[in-house]
Amino acid sequence: MKFGVTLFATDEGIWPSALGKAVEERGFDSIWLAEHSHIPASRETPFPLGGELPREYYRAYDPFVALASISSVTERILLGTAITLIIQRDPIHTAKAVATLDQVSGGRAVLGVGVGWNLEEMRNHGTDPSVRGRLADERLAAIREIWTKEQAEFHGTLVDFDQIYSWPKPVRQPHPPIYVGGNSAAAVARAIRHDAGWLPFAVPEPRLVDQQLAMAERAGGGDSTPITITSFDPSKRAVLSAYMESRVERILFLLPEGRESETLHRPDGLAGLIESMQ
Image 1 (tube, one colour):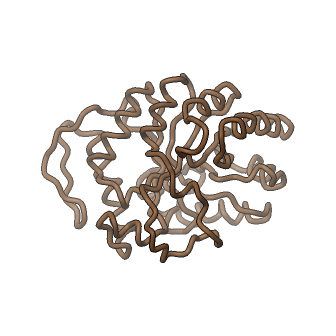
Image 2 (cartoon, rainbow, N blue to C red):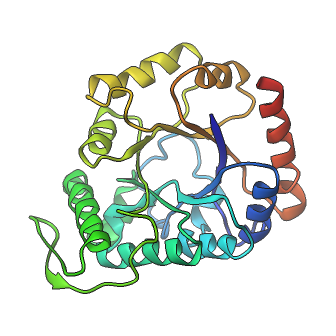
Image 3 (cartoon, rainbow, N blue to C red):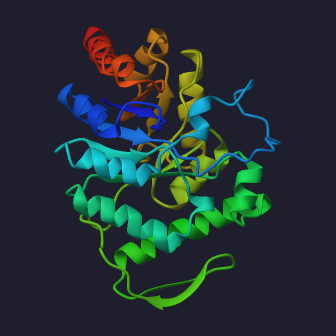
């Protein structure tokens, strides 16, 4: 079992480089940053978890810029997105951003993607929410073409471009790992279609762990689909134990956004929790 952390890195919180260094020093294998390009002032779409939208959603750094800053002070940890809103990002720019991160970090980039929930945010990017699933599929396929072909081209219904040159290419071959976020059967199916990993949110109760993993089995993933659990609440020790006894490859502990003085001690507590459970 591997362990990492995930959070919204914001302009009001700890410097990403300081946190990344602390996470690596304490033995975690990865750090994954969330993304929202903006939050529409209308706030028509309800927050899926209920209540008011947390402040950090409004203030998130661009994840690739923040991860690049982390790469400059670390040597080992993987640098992931949990998640990149791929339906709001141009695939050519996204392919270059991830490949550049992979280059400057020495092959440590991981692309976690999702289709999102905020319909107004999507529309501001010119995305029709009704086709976001198909758009995610085409953009993922196009990004892979750009990463792996000297002259890449893609001709889909929603993504279409003739032959292009795009460097740098990723360090890792054939390309950096891809994970598809979401707890739905559609998310699992998308991960399997793209030969990617699955990145679901943690369940709240131990009895739900087997049901969650069975979803991957039913979708045809078998034991071959890598599974990383994200946004895990470290107070759920019984759920952590159930995941540790399963085939899950990695758990990402959710770090609340906070100032450096409030945040740097948290990896210590998480490292102690892991040690006590093993």
